[in-house]
Amino acid sequence: MLSIQTKAEKICELLIENYGNTIVEREMEPIDELVLAILSQNTTDVNMFRAFENLKAVYPTWEQVLATSEGELAEVIKPSGFFHVKANRIQATLNEIHRRVGRLDISHLKDMPLPDAKKWLTSLHGVGPKTASIVLLFCFGKATLPVDTHVWRVTKRLGLIPEKTSRESAQPLLEEILPHDCIYSLNHNLIRHGREVCLARRPRCASCILQGECDYFQKTTCH
Image (tube, rainbow, N blue to C red):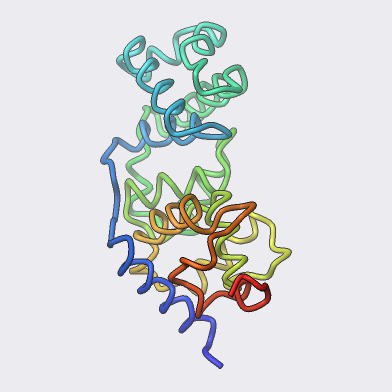
């Protein structure tokens, strides 16, 4: 039987063969990426970007975001949903960064060890493991995997993590077994595979390129 690390490497290779080796689709300043990640919580990509574009159009600087009222900010980011909660989180996060660093800048995270950088970010109000990983992966190239619902579902079905693993506890388990040079492409490829093939209700097992590595496929009658 293959080790879990060998299985993870094989899955990574198959996904790259099918979807490519995408590293990152956008280049943003770290604070921009952090706020965008907060806006992304519990909404679609379309609504997330619409809210972010509104925010940048109304407030060209993050200092202006801090200076406005929470209610006005909430109205600007309304397309993202849960806009009152997110407005509070954005302002609280920016305030805390300014208090700790003396300016709205988190570039110091680049030189911090990954565990320390994660701890620093997740200590901010409204910043969880997924949000922190998005910033650290996309902005600083650190080998940490953001675990959204697609990544969580697909990796459980594949058997990379136990079936009853919570989404939050999935991240350290996956980062321990995944080859670090593959994590960058996996963020994109696992999400795409979850959206197009490994669907939540009716997974398309018959056309899945990961059949040979998938515990779920072996246990069901899909094949």
